[in-house]
Length: 234
Image 1 (cartoon, rainbow, N blue to C red):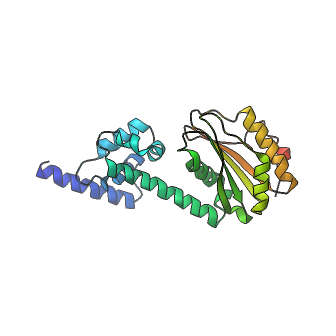
Image 2 (cartoon, one colour):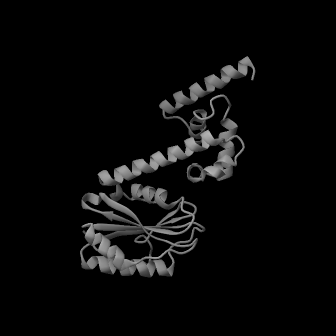
Image 3 (cartoon, one colour):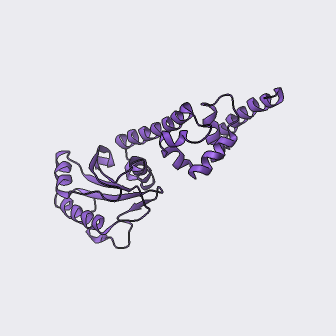
């Protein structure tokens, strides 16, 4: 690298930092700036573009396994760890917010939390979020693990657990790791059965959220076939 190139290299990184502080960085430039902290002596503009071309979105980059990140030429162990560390810290912040306030009562934040919860799973997993007053998270538990295209719901077990925790609300979350398909007929029936049981003890089924392989979040209650009249109101 020539002296002129080196000066541009240093100056470019400082300009990225200034743009970040001014709130003017594009998504691609934010990824570039992140990489500079793991790769201090190299122009990472091309590498940032390569990652986006390979994984198609920032979301997919953050959720990619370390082995897949390191398969990209130029992404070493340190860079891959930094990306996953950023992802894990984001998940921790969501968990802390969910336990401390009304975070999960907001649809956008609820969807983000649930997307991060199961998007890395390679098989279907069913999670149950048990909520207390003001939608505070009491417990986030794995209810069942299945195959790449199936997970099971046991409504009576969820009912018993909700009562043991003195929960006032429940959110079901599961993923489709291999497709962008919406709820199956089995999902619909199991959710309806659970809703009927929970209503008997005045526990609200807040929603059943399905996270697809592409990061799309489907809401059970937003579907046209959902029997909204059976929804237990607060």
